[in-house]
Length: 245
Image (cartoon, rainbow, N blue to C red; front, top):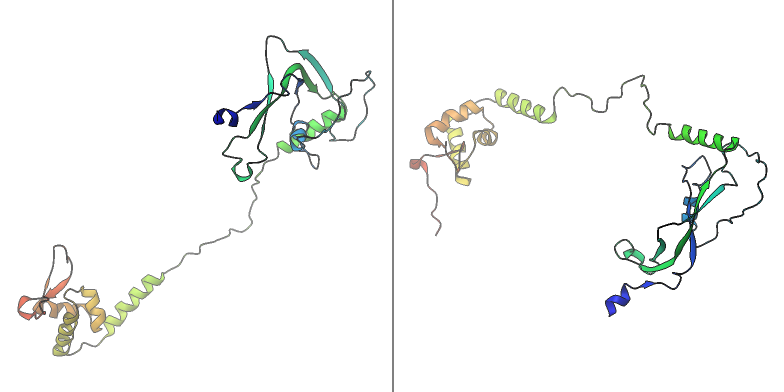
C-alpha cells in the first residue's frame, strides 16, 4: 500500500482542458533570448504572455533582427486522440533529482491544437536571414601563421646520452690500477654482494670495463641462465660466505 501511495499520480486537475501549442524554437540571435518555447521553459510556473485574438490589422514595422510581437495561431480540434499533460515535481529531491522520480500530477487533458506561426513580414525575414548567417559561421577558424611555432625543439644529445658518453670518457682516461689492487677491490665488492653486473663493478672500481672483465674471467664465472642471468659471481674456490642458520 505504501508503494502505491509513493508512486501515485495526482489527478485533481485531470479534467481541466488545455491547449497543445506548437511553437518554433529559434536559435539565439545576438542579445535576444531564445524564442518562445525556451522562454516558457525558463519561466516555468509564471505567465510570460497573453493570447489575444483581435480583428486582423495591418502589418507593423519592426526593427531588424527582432522577435515578432504578434504571431498567427492556427486552431484545430483533437480528433481520434486522447492526450494529457503529465507534470513531474522534483522540488524536494535536491541533489537526488537526477536519479529519483518526483511527484507526478495530471495538469489537464488536451482539448485543442494550436500552431503558432510567425507573420511573413519583412522583419521576420530579416531575423531568419540573421539566424541563418549566424548559424553558418564556423565555430573554429583556420588562421595562417607567418612563422611556425616550435614547441618541442630538437636536442642533439639527451641528458642520458650525455651521462653515458661522460662515463665512457672517464673510464677510457682512467689510469689502470695495479693488478693486485684491482683484485682486492673486486674481492671486497663480492664480500658485500654475491652477484654483480660488469657495469656495476666498473663504476665501483673506476677502472676500464675491459680491464675489469679480464680479471673477472680469472676469479669469477658469468651466469647465462636465470635467475642471475648476465651477472658475475666468484668461483667456488674463492667463495667464503657465512652459512645462515
